[in-house]
Length: 440
Image (cartoon, rainbow, N blue to C red; front, side, top):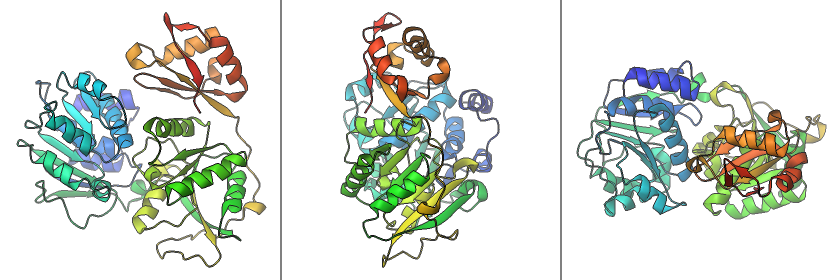
């Protein structure tokens, strides 16, 4: 793609008028081997896209560029950004576990120009002859540090060995790497390091301690969340069973809370993020799986219910708030006699939930699920028109619409959700009968 095509699409399809400092530094890079060090939320996908898309020529019936990412969520998010920037010029396909292989086989029947994939899924398609990477010129190893943590090194090595035409390699990481991969040429790599800059770190973030009189911390967590009045908040715990326990306790307390961890089915993880983003459940209890690689809107606060296990985990959790110049809050719940790691710092002092003036609670939101999406020729405008005309609500009452290939999630005031479900049953959108239910 040309610089002008890339710039025009970034402006018109992503709404970015001016690149940030990190993205400008990536745009200026002339090296063919680049290591990009930048925290979550710094806009690194656009940063490496500037290099990747310039290195990708016009469509020629072969895969020309590959992005390897460690999680399904990051693959989906990255592919969507690349699709918008490459719109009208290049085809982008996303390959990952947890959804239909048949749909992936269909999209691969005509070779995409760019593949974004998790290592295992890409390697499986390659071994079955569905993807040929021999002509790939540009490779991005996104969040390489996380890929190492998850044990994907051997899969990545097998994939890269089949790439015989590489001219550009970009490796991204949120932390400094002790060693670079031995299966790809990064000799003399240029390093673009924005970990310690004000822009890379995001906006002003306060770090405060919350003292818990009990080692259990549940009562303290509930008091803290109530004091925050429904701000979009992620509560981090260290284990899946702990996530289930904390989630259950907060739900029984009547708080609008969701759950996210690796033991959930993919559809339940997707719904948790949709409901978190649109305000249905503005509180999310998560393991460290949720600390990066997710397409999450602005997070006002992060709560460490359990102490982070490493300095890197501390950094990644905190990186969910204060992103892209926004302010944020970090709370560390500490019980008496608890061991606090040296890297955990709360320089802004203590916070007492009991003494806080509770923020005004927001209007309760419900999420409606539509069993049709983009591939069924349904648009956001179709959904808005349907709800207004058939459901009798004002367009201003409709919140975030998350439109997927085969479904859609729509935020509406909880006060009207039950009536909408009753009134819309059996109605058609664009001549198609669509089943509508509440996403729980």
